[in-house]
Image: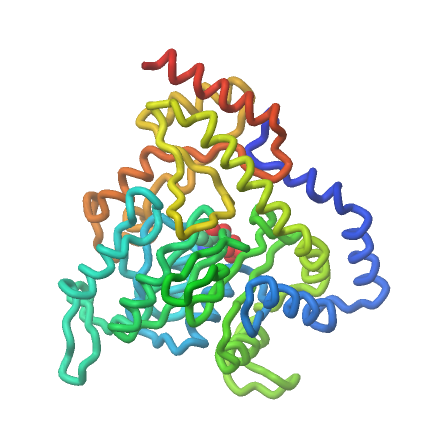
Length: 395
Ligand SMILES: Cc1ncc(COP(=O)(O)O)c(C=O)c1O
């Protein structure tokens, strides 16, 4: 059954741009330029400019972008890469596929991003130095070499603090910016607003259709200011080659289709406006739900300009509220219901319930409300009305 108010409307933005998007398909058909070529290169240039970085390498998915960024930044098989448990599994899949081992840090209870205090505690108390001075995780006995903050729901993690700790402990920082195209962070250190994807050694973006900038299929990108890292990422996406049939190393088939690059290039000039609409809708929810004592609203620190890939509230009676909204024809989601350390796929990591209490509690209470640029004021009013109605009746 289709919702009267969908969780996400993927049709409206495409119909708005139908003529230009069809033009890209036509250009692809007429030139048979399906893989590589000018459409990819032009999009890469434009997305690098948007992210305020020197280089963008377009790849086949956000997962590949993460994996290539990690490998190209020198993360070695057997290394430990630190991340959070409340992310999509792609973050840790990429860590494992790069040959490394994920270890988790709990999240901040307000922003739901990596807790800087917990990261500091981990580095100070759960690691040691070996004879050669390498930082070793006491948990696994392996060298800790990198940290992957995830800019969850479109809000950046506290990058100044993470970069300060990373610098102190010699860690590489790879941003998982897959949900954060255009998000900004005010760096006190640099005294200016910084774009997601421009602060770490490298970053990964996803262009999965539902993202703030989505392809009409799969796609992703590595962004970086490091020319060598960019050129290794280019090789990794293309079977380890710079010149056709000359392979300097083994790589992957991880390229972005030219037609997808063209479609993304058509959409890119609209991204800032779409993000502004998302921020506007978030402000609308914040204002109309401010008096509701049953739900916890998203928290945006003064240093953050989030792009609300998702608008996520918390309530102890999640199931009841979601069922009520479903009956009223309103779509919702949970991002994500089971933290990664408790997933079957990671049973071998030997984490247990209670290891990351903040992430576990948050996972049991979060609900993502309808959020997309074309969400109308009337639709939003209806979502708010149903939430208020349910909360009054249930308490
Ligand atoms: C936080 C996060 N990391 C990584 C990914 C992986 O991106 P993709 O689905 O394009 O491989 C996603 C997207 O689903 C994501 O939300």
